[in-house]
Length: 87
Image 1 (tube, helix red, strand yellow):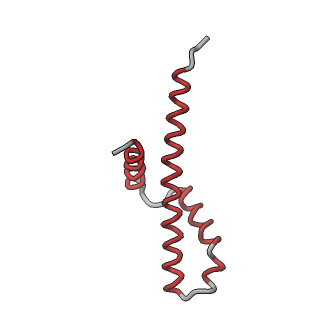
Image 2 (tube, rainbow, N blue to C red):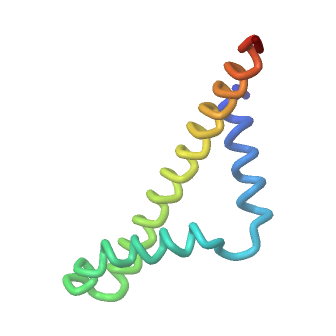
């Protein structure tokens, strides 16, 4: 397992330990529902539920990728800071 797998495991552990939705997740849920609100009018309930669930899965993938990229960036920044010599 490479570093991406380790970071993803860290992300999944954090998500599993989170009770319910935090403020950021609630905000994202509201924004996603607003974005697909018009689509709901064009679909029956079952079709919209499947569509909504897919939208949320896509958003979750983006959130995970954002965590991995952010973690990598923070680590690179940390390394750069540690390599700088103080005057």
